[in-house]
Each structure stands twice: as structure tokens, then as C-alpha cells.
Amino acid sequence: MPGRAGAQDEQLSLAQLVALAQEQSIAVRQAKTAMDTRYWEWRTFQAALRPQLLLMGNLPDFTREFREVVQPDGTVEFQSVTVNNSDIRLGLSQSVAATGGEVFVNTVVQRFDDFDRDKAIYSGQPFAIGFRQPLFGYNELKWDKQIEPLRYRESQQQYLQAREEIAVEATALYFDLLLAQVNLEMAQANLAGNDTLFKIALEREALGLLSRNDLLQLQLGVLNARKDVASARQGLEAARLALCAYAGIREEQPLRLGIPDDIPAVKADEEQALKLAWASRPEVAGFERRRLQAQQAMARARGETGIDATLSASFGLSNRAGRFGEIYQQPQDYETVRLQFSIPVVDWGRTSSRRATARANQELAEAAIEQDKVTFEQEIRTQTKLYNMLRDQLELSYQADQIARERYSIAKKRFILAGLSITDLNLALQEKDFARRDYIQSLRSFWLAYYSLRSLTLYDL
Image 1 (cartoon, rainbow, N blue to C red):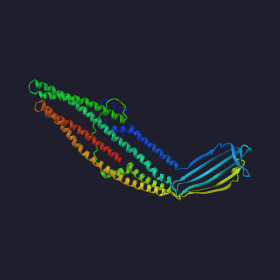
Image 2: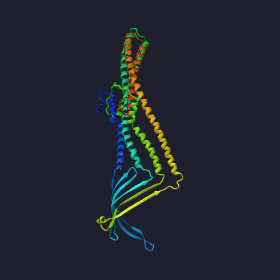
Image 3: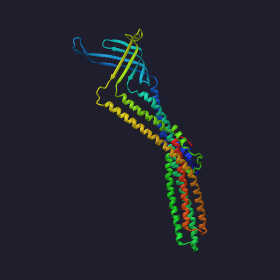
Image 4: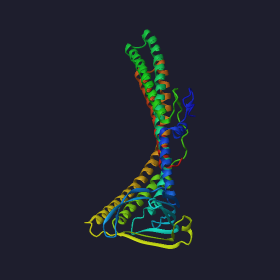
């Protein structure tokens, strides 16, 4: 399709253009990139929930310097030190989303070299298991576990909505070009018709059957028709370039558009449209995400302004030896337990002010969400009513177009037979052109309403 979209004499339908824009336009590539970016952010979050195996170490950790050494009598001497203190650690850790803590398993080996005394010793922990648990604090992982799936689902639905919004924009450009195409066709037809009538009028004026004033009026009609053709050609080229640029069509041949007459037979039901929208629109996941983020901000304000405490403990085996292998022979038990805490005593109202701000922001966010829900439903109901109304009015516009064209044909024949004035003929011509443009505009309004309703419900009627 992209390679043949501009082929001469080949008509491009509205459905083909929409599919083309949704496949290769810059807008769809931007939407796809945004969705892919959110996908990898989702994968990053999922990886954080899984066990992490990490190898850490200092190889080497060499130092040569003069160090301050306190002597037995209390004096200080600076002595030359040449040492290497290397270590390597292999650790497996697992975050606990429910509590915000971490469970880990480690094995550690350390070697200390004293080059001045030509001495090397080893120490290590063949096995250690432990945990770190924040107390009373803010558990970010717990909130992320609730919010990140909503953000991921929202991004997928945003991509689908972006494709439907592309369809709306492509439809507008399609009808801009179609109207320009129809304007040129009418201008060329009017020019040919006026030229024929002018030649007939010349013969009738020579026979004294037509006044000079009517002849000049017909001649002026020919000149205006030529101006209309030139203006219509310029408008057609501008509309064609805009459509090609948006849809990603690179060919230079003129586009020939067909008038879309495959009007959907089904009418839209408001309640069904609302049901579909609540099931598919990204805003629905966004409402819940925004509500949770407001609660998250409140939880962060509480957790970061109160008592800050962390309990950590580890248990395992440890040993020291003069050789590497000996640290694994008859290791000794070891245990560590630590409670670190920080309690604000006087903060001059900082804690209460921050919590009050977070609470006010939460209430504001909840009010905004409720208002957006009302707007969400009103928009769908309004668009559904508009779609049904435009669908019903489309038949009236079509009938008016057919009647106006037939009336002009009759008026033209009557003028040739000298049974109609030039004024009445021009009036019939104007009504014909107006009815034709009105029909195309009615089609434009209907199809824009159709694709807009698809964008609001993410469902094809």
C-alpha cells in the first residue's frame, strides 16, 4: 500500500488512509516508542522483585603510606605501612515487598597482606544469612507493586488510543483533500459549462435574442470560473502535501480520493459506549493510579517524618587462618544484631506541616479524579449523541445534493431554450455547489464523529 498510495487513477479510500497512517506515520512511531519505553520500565520493576545475585570485591586494595600509630606511652609515631587488604563477596538478596525489608545470603573471603613484615592472613564468612528491616518507615516497594501494573496497563491502552487519535487526524486531512478535490472538479465543470453557455449567448446576442448586459454577465462568469479553477488547484496541492506529510506518503503523484459511502448501519448506544470505555480507556487505569499515588505521597510524608529505625541481623559461620583453605575448616559461629534509630525531638513543626501538605494534596487529587470521571462520562454521552445525530442528518444532505444537481441540470436546459434568466441560472449553480460542499462537509463531520467515538471507547462500531 505505501508504495502505491499515490498511483495515478487509483482511488485511496478513507479506510486505506487510516490504516496507512496507523502503520507508518510519525505519530504512530512516537506512540510505539512511548509504549516500548514504558514496557522496559515495567521489566525493570519486575526484575527488582526477583532475587539478585551480586559479586562484589576489592581486588586489589593496596596502600603504601605513613600512618599515625599511638605508642604505649601515649606518644605518636608515623610509621611506614605497605599493605593490601582485598576481599570478595558473593551475595544473594531478595526484597520483601510486603514489609520493605531484605533477606540475604552471603559468602565472604578477605586477605590481608603486610608487605613490610612479609605476612599474609585470611578471614572470611563461609556462610551467612540475615535480614534488614526498616521499622515505621515508608515502604516504597509496597506502593510500587500496586502502582506499576496500572502504569503498564495504562501505557498499553494509551497506545491503542493514540492509534485511534491518529485515525481522527487522518480523517480530517482526508476530507480536507477530498473537499479540495471536489472544489476543483466543480470549478472545472463550471468553467466548461459557463464557456459553453457564453458561446451560445454570443450567437443569441448576434440575433438580438439576448441583451448586452446578460452577455457581459455570462462573460464575467467565465472569468470567475477560471479564477476558481486556479484557486482550487492551489488548495488541492496544499491539502495533498499536508495529507502526505502526516500519513508518511512519499510519492509525488497526485492522490485520487473516493467519497466514503459505506456508512455503518448500527447506531451507538450510550450505555454500551460507557461500558466499553470504562473497560478499555487508559483514563480508567489512570484514575486508580492517581488515587494510589496520592495515598503514596501521604504514606511517604508519614514514614519520612516520624521515627526512623532499621533492625538488621545476620547469623552464620566465620573463621581466620594463615592459609586460604583453612578458613573453611572448623569455622566458628557468629551473630550480629543491630537496631539503628532516629527520633525527631524538636523540628519546629516540620513534621506536622509536611503531613498536612500531603493530606491537602491527597484531598485535592481525589476531588480532581471525581471531576474527571464526570467529564469522562459526559464526553462519551455527548459524542454518542453527536454520532447518531450526524448519521441521521447525512441522508438529508445527500438528498439535498441530488436535488440541487438535478435542478441545475433542468435550469441549464431551460436557459439554452431561452426559458430562464441568467440570474435564475446562476442561483441554481450556486445552490448546486453549496449542496455538494455541504454533503462533503456532512460526511466529514460524520466520519470524524465515528472515529472520535472509537477513540473514546476503543471499540469499532
